[in-house]
Each structure stands twice: as C-alpha cells, then as structure tokens.
Image (tube, rainbow, N blue to C red):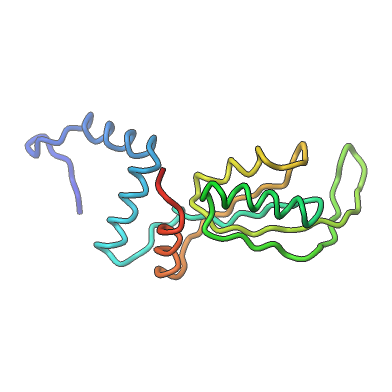
Length: 147
C-alpha cells in the first residue's frame, strides 16, 4: 500500500507531475510496465492490444502489414483469408469481400495503421489485452522497441 503524506516529502504536486510525465511519454510507461512485470510477475492490463484491420484485397493487406512491421510497430500480423462483409455505406447496404488482419501491438501504436490504409474510412479497431501469457507479452515487448 502506498500513501502520500506531508511528512513523506512526496507532495500531491509531485505525484501529479509523475503521473502526467509517465502518461505523456510512452517509453516511460513501457519501462514502468516492464518493472511492474519483473517485480510482481504479473501483467498490466491495457499495455498491449489486438488490432483488427480490414483491407480490400490481399495485396493491400500485405502492404499495410509490411508498413507496420517495417516500422516495428507490431509484434505480429496475421492476414486471414477472404471474408464476406456487409456494412452500411452512404445509407445503403453493401456486400463485399475483404481481407481481415489481426495484429498484436502496444496499445498506443495502432494510430499509424490508418495513415497507410487505402480506404477513406478504414475499419481499424483496437482491443486492449486484459490478460494473457506473460511469456508472450514479454516477447512482444522485445519485438517492439520503445522509441
């Protein structure tokens, strides 16, 4: 249990500064998560995410995947075979074939995928990982640099 008392020399302002600094700098957050994992042997929920991305065809999926992997933003990307998709677009029901991509990455890195996508409004959904294999999470941290 951690408490902040006036006699501890750790003021409310110091605590606020520490929280803001860590939240603004992903590298510091990542180091803090790794230290937590080392000392407690547990995973910090929300540090990693599973990302779903749709793509018009296999080549576009490979191009998006390669752009993400070249920048070491994801630990892995699975490109699944053609799927049937139904969705509303401009008030009409559309029926299309698409490729679905599933990626494992650090939560804050998903934004880049939208910038390399050919769709004007791509389906890019990020789901925070609440729990999982600690060994796999450590591998993800090693595969994705902190810069």
